[in-house]
Amino acid sequence: MEKILISSCLLGQTVRYDGGHNLRQDEWMLRWQREGRIVAFCPECAGGLPTPRPAAERVGDLVLTAQGEDVTAAFRLGAQKALTLVQEQGIKVAILKARSPSCGNQQIYDGSFSKRLIAGRGMAAELLLAAGISVFNETELAEAAMRLAQLEVE
Ligand code: SF4
Image (tube, protein in one colour):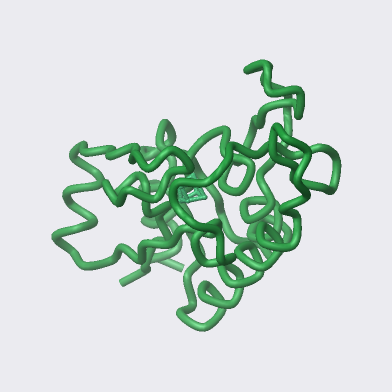
């Protein structure tokens, strides 16, 4: 059975930068939980950042806090650990939190800390996609389920 890497905050773990979570409970998530396919992971925690932590946004290849602190190294480390984990466990599908500077798969904030979104990817999502992992966000669970079904008949 194919496993799925899922952002820890979508599973209710209080790992968000502000100490909160983004619990996403719907039929697909509950089913995958029952099937024991879910591997929870938070790239920012894995990169050594504390919770809570200052909000950060991508600015090109860097990740900076609103105060200008460069936290790129921790974000890169977390992304690298995500990649190592999927490779070790043979995971081919990830569901990552939309718009995060680590996890966003389509859009991210533009680096101005003014809630403006641009097309782009978080550091971990970018690395996983480059490695051929199918990365979805929490609004794309049906698409993720289709990809899993496809992999399971291959
Ligand atoms: Fe959630 Fe990803 Fe942010 Fe961790 S890094 S809190 S998993 S969005």
